[in-house]
Length: 244
Image (cartoon, rainbow, N blue to C red; front, side, top):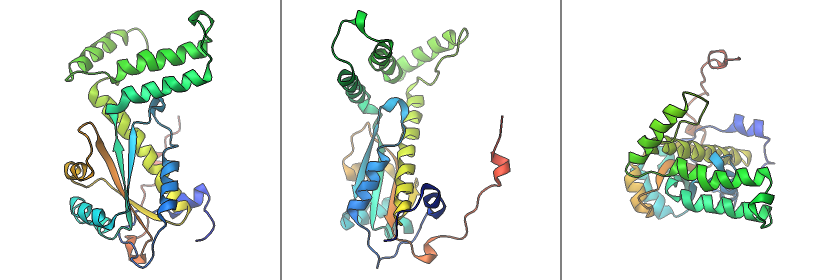
């Protein structure tokens, strides 16, 4: 394997590869390292509402491929990584962050706590539960109406309904997936993010709980020349770049 690429080189090298070379294997330990780097991605409130399923079993890959509509990227993959959102774990993750705060600040009366500690504890103890709590969508609409009223008088965070928080955790998980794909490109490995899949069947195959949702499935391997479908196409940068 050649020396690791710079970030810019990895971004330029990365392509969505649809056909992998069956004669060229990849090292699962290196893929795992790239998944570890995925877990370092920035994420909303450091809640880390994600899980990464590293599929190395050829048998499982063969079962998942039809659920990805037999895309070549799935059928020829050496390995797969399934990026999963876990909004349902928000209480556990908030508690973990409060535990982290406990390690940063020694126990002391609230009157002696620094402003940073008070803000941090209030955030994970009150604001996060306010944002993530819901009951059959009813509480979400109550929060939304309350936000509309308060928002008449000052700037306020408005995405507090269940569907809003679902978007938040999917954005977070996508950031991790991008970290993973760039990390793979840096070591000369190829990937293809696949949104097209029967997520219900994949969830059932992996034994995922009801509260879990699949963000994307990323296939992994070493590209064949024909596995890159043509030159990269992008809309002219001047059409998408807006300087204010």
